[in-house]
Image 1 (cartoon, rainbow, N blue to C red):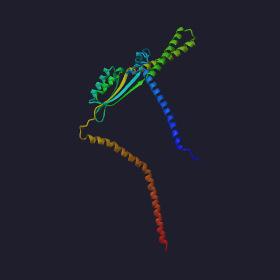
Image 2: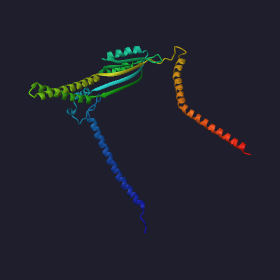
Image 3: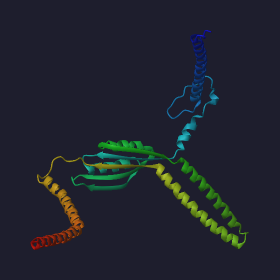
Image 4: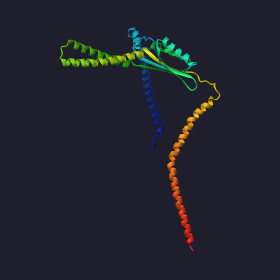
Length: 305
């Protein structure tokens, strides 16, 4: 009995697999194309971001477009706290500090903090903290960077809109509670105990309202005025005033090292002294026993005929 040949069966199986795979690939391609078309339609239907122009779609009517003032209102409601820091190498620190103060005043702000020091290389360096108007923050930062060579710069922006909204909600609730308590106390129809309890509750509510109002004022100031920290320092001098200055600096650096070495040696001697004394005592005892043993052995040898 002849066995059936396997080649025709394998060929038929490959043809069937190719047909099934081709149909599956066509379905996957059609599905991907459908998703791409849907994504393009969703991208065209999204609201425009600031400075971006979305081409008009023939399928959308003018009435479906978003109002032009909605985007401006959204950005106007943002509560952003912006801070920046810049490190500059300036020719002369005193002149740079005066120009930094002038920049702060010119941009509707002031110098909040200032600190200056002189390093061992006889260079003046200091840090000045500026508070400028938020709408002129970028201009002030560019003016500061033009004062010298920028070595480093950082910029941070924090959106406190959610915190501010929660604060406004809590403050509104406290104000409503205070108004109701004041109305209750104006009627004076309740019992004396209820009136006293209402006055205590009113004082507590007023205190909490004032705390919330203080937090809101702090947020308002942080949003209205941005903070820029400018660290200025003079360049390193390559010419020395005295030829012996490197030697004096080397000696000044060597003295602490010498003191540290002597201190370490004293510590080591103090730690090793008890063990050295113990080793000396053990050596003396062992030496005495050895001498006695040698003497005893010599006596025994001399006594033997």
